[in-house]
Length: 59
Image 1 (cartoon, helix red, strand yellow):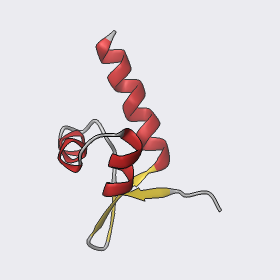
Image 2: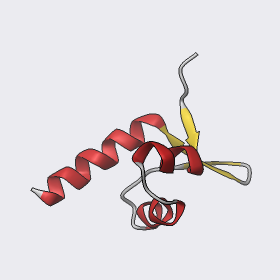
Image 3: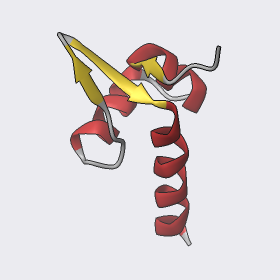
Image 4: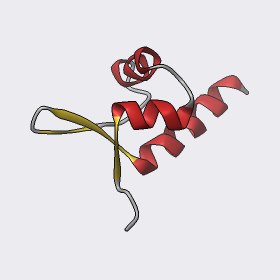
């Protein structure tokens, strides 16, 4: 089964950044998340959206 969401740690690992950096992306609105109960989860497609946005900003 394909993963639909990642934990914050898993998302940070996939982006190869620290948890702190990932939380900064979340706080700035650059990375979408969902909250289920007390857990903050990152949808898989939100990672690619975030990367596209950061790439456009860098260009």
